[in-house]
Length: 509
Ligand SMILES: *[C@@H]1O[C@H](CO)[C@@H](O)[C@H](O)[C@H]1NC(C)=O
Ligand SMILES: *[C@@H]1O[C@H](CO)[C@@H](O)[C@H](O)[C@H]1NC(C)=O
Ligand SMILES: *[C@@H]1O[C@H](CO)[C@@H](O)[C@H](O)[C@H]1NC(C)=O
Image (cartoon, rainbow, N blue to C red; front, side, top):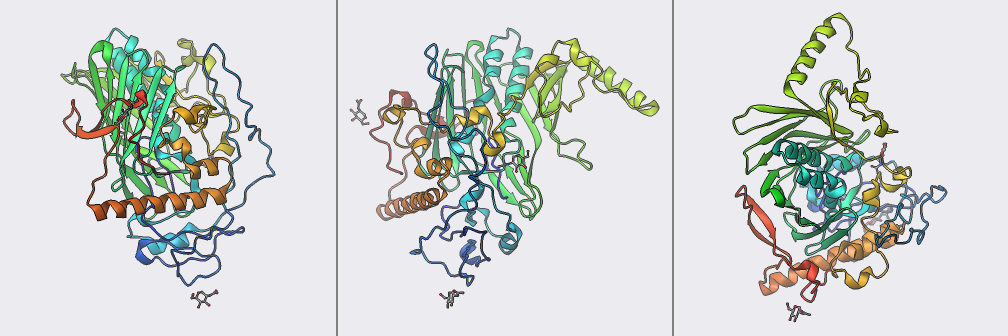
């Protein structure tokens, strides 16, 4: 229930590390509510007095592991072999997701309203087996849009691709209500995808407040993509709003162009009762710092009857604010663009038509640009396409077993894969080596809970030790600085990760 976490808006929702209390989950359901002492929620299935003790490390078996389901998961080692030297990636997780038991989070949370969210610990059953650092790597799923941007001779066309990339980067959050693991301070994640033409490195550079810094580069020296993400969370009683902070920068090297933007606000509704759903809203402005062109995208709030749900609308303008191109679609589905004159005349006709009869939807307009063939099978297209529009991006279909895999996309499924031989080359701080995430991925929830507890205690102990010695934490691959294009505070990659000298990496696991 609680939980979202948005890849871009990056919520480190419920960062729980400083909280000593823990939730108990029995083999049945969670037990009665404990106290909210010290800002923590404490659960104990056997004793509801609210006492909790540090020493008591019992971790009861976790909620219903659904072993009866056969869903094509769990066939480890079935990965296809290398072909043409390109590594194939796994298509399913080693174990299916367990079902979350249906207990009332409300009964717990109503006692916690007003408390700092970061002090509330949720049971691991609400996690997904990924670190938040891996979750931000999901920005890269549609990296082909960056390559496409780089190939466009016209600045306007490049901006169209960049806008599509910015929207596509948040698409993986759709229906992803599992909470990623909070990265430990000093944790890193690397991803090299030769098939997709990029490599990526991220590091947790601050714990309070949580800040994740990332840096990616095209393998053909065509782009740099970097930023730092620090979410600001607000608990509104029924929903949690994550306001993204931190600038995202894309540099197209061949064009000597930098684009910057900030992600939209992500809101998780019904964190307490009802069905969880995720909404993104707010205005995203993508600036081309070389030309002064700007793309203004409005992520619409859902509105009264849900009519605007997931809608994105906006335009590209030049430095004199002249509208050059209109953009519309949904961040969950697809994005289209059209010439402003054609857009206006369509809107005018539509308004007129509305008074007489209902306007005709779609009516073959999609066929006009030959885009019918790659329609999304399951999620039906719900965006009304204006004749003459150009398809800028369409979401990838999720794998058929996605529902048993925390609603992961195919790209996401591969993120925590530990390919043979990888242990030897990975930094010792890499998320793939985190035993709690690995345990959860393998369906071993007891191990996952124990290890999570152990890692968090180890982190607290290290912090106490530093405090004693009055030592400052040293980040490894990123340094605090300011964004060269916007002047805002940022974390900049200092280089050298891929030379793989990991002798100075901290021991965090
Ligand atoms: C709960 O713990 C308290 C204090 O440790 C104890 O006095 C009480 O009997 C316990 N209650 C149950 C139901 O175990
Ligand atoms: C996955 O999506 C379905 C809706 O399609 C939703 O009911 C379910 O809660 C989602 N699961 C997770 C883990 O977010
Ligand atoms: C790795 O880095 C350490 C210190 O930063 C240095 O002493 C060592 O020589 C380096 N090792 C290699 C193989 O470059």
